Length: 304
Image (tube, rainbow, N blue to C red; front, side, top):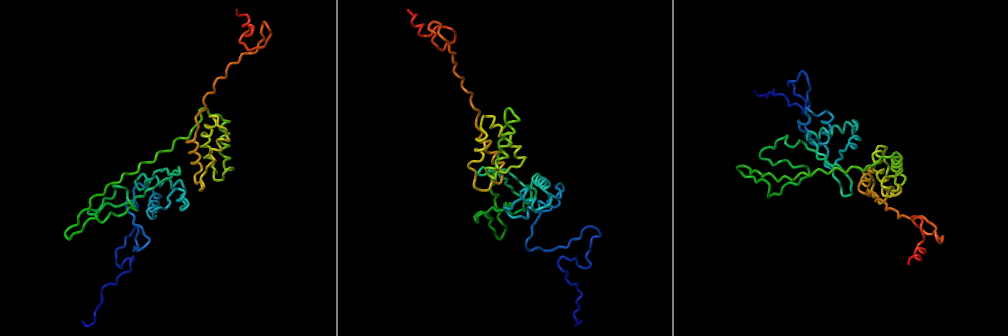
């Protein structure tokens, strides 16, 4: 009994199953690691979602790992991943349909349209709040002042009254439709297409794709139909452009073609009727008259 016998098994290393622990015969065996930095907590309601595709689940986890202000547009994500814009756009629509994303179109003070996105770790109403804790605040929302925090006593905590719900922002109105001509004509449409394709000669930032030219050509035809000269249309589209880089030239041109569309010209007044020249039957003097008759001088001399 003088010699101490250590018969307890040694402690296994973190993440490695201990000798003799049950190992499943089939399926996955996890080797756990405790993260202390650069990690994200993701709910199983997303990672094991029954209706979301694998692309949407992976994209949802990636979005939750990003900081506030990160770019999650379709083009930015397509540069990061190899799935392509079509699959990424479909995955974003899935996340939006199931409540993980909220995307709204907002018009800025500089007349640009931008998409504002709110990402939810859990869709509203899916995960119930724990009893005795205030509702979770969106990221970036300041904490309530000390006077509104629940007071702690030795017996029980005082529950905090639910904060007032801020009204959700109204969805941004859709942009007005582009003007269209009343009577489409091939020649006028061709002139409108050439005008739009040549705008980059005046400003290299107004480089349009073939699809944008085809979409904006009817609007330019509506201007030409209202007797606006092509040079006047070009001057309206290219004058007073912003000094900053133009990220969406087609949207800028569509705004100007819609908001600055002039009204149709009023009907021209009828020209005054001019009588033809005739010769007087009495003195053969030329004068204007509707029919053959004497001139005013001869009629005056015959008047008693």
